[in-house]
Length: 201
Image (tube, rainbow, N blue to C red; front, side):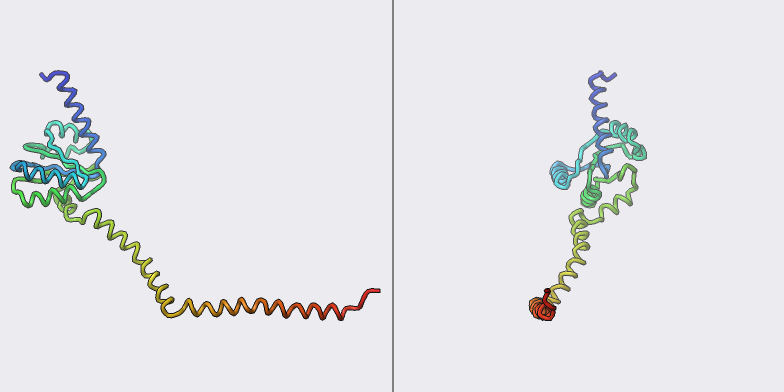
């Protein structure tokens, strides 16, 4: 029978895994059988650089954690060698990197995964793997927002190039010159009225 300290250590690992599962938006479970140290090091580096946490886990402990957070549909694949890749805010990185790695390594296999707290099938993971990176998606969205602004800017520039602004300036100058002239015309009229008025006795 395991000692109390061993049981407490396992409970702590299960609690940590459960918190990790709940905090992540996407998780992918893989079998890493047959991977050598060099390839494993490269894979871990690429995942880490893309904000994906990747760890080898014991099936029994991960099963307890998945049961705790409502992902028990993954229990059937938790056998053999198992590693868990999770991302807190990127829906595509883990699936994309692991799927590409699996194509080059026959013994490396994606077993299951989840997204937003629900287990997804392998087709969904494959679709996620084919999506562009977050940087590309953000660039596309930004480009869509900038397109109307760019069109407006081009329209304004076209007016300037055709002399639209310059043509507006003489009209404004004429309006300014007309104001003093109107004031000068009003002054003699007031003086004339003053002269025609009879003097008070």
